[in-house]
Image (tube, rainbow, N blue to C red; front, side, top):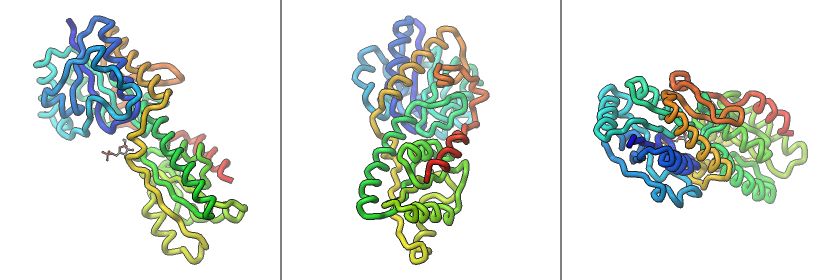
Length: 323
Ligand code: F6P
């Protein structure tokens, strides 16, 4: 029986379990035997895996994180690491590999694919910065977590007429900040794709009070040139002149550990199933990502080392709306 392996790599993302479940069950239905490597590429290199049957992937759909574990694996970046990974696949008689993960993981997948490993990538990262996918597994659930936090901060901010700064994840991409900021009605949104100086952010918040608002909320992406710490330092120095103080909440990994919403459960399921379809059709070396509402194939060669910035039209809209 043809043996297929699946692994999750890089930062965990809500919906990865749905993808593992879909890969496993659709592959079994197509006549494959399935194994799951533990702890991403680290487990692949070490030959750590476990058999996955339909029952082993039951009861995981609603859980965040990944049932297989994951790591950021530096070893795979070296020639010897790649060689060990290929040897491990040969030793375990694996004929095809599915890699569920984001940017760094798909770059690693491309390297493995160049070594001749029949491989399919599945687009998954809360950052939503992957070339070849309009929206990646985990991004919308992470936005929902950030949004809940913003909604709660607004309640206390309005009660006490305070200004809050909320720092969200996203690495060099402003998607999480932008979408959580727009949906949360933030008065200022700071993203790496359109960096603001601290003085501009201060002015946007001051102007919100001047327009009669009872509170002011700024959402800042961790990857912005002036992120939370720089903004807090500026506000500390100019406290008297500005006339209001700023309180900081860094959401950090809280955003990653939430349960997947319906969208991510469906996205993980759809992309996982599409990955197996691609394997059956022997369309190797591609990333499966949602484009224009459908699972689409993008060559890993185009995806590797590349990223996708937040939508510029949405950035412009955010400025118009923050009134
Ligand atoms: O790529 C997902 C992500 O959560 C980024 O938003 C964040 O910058 C990074 O991972 C944090 O990585 P780690 O969990 O390794 O600290």
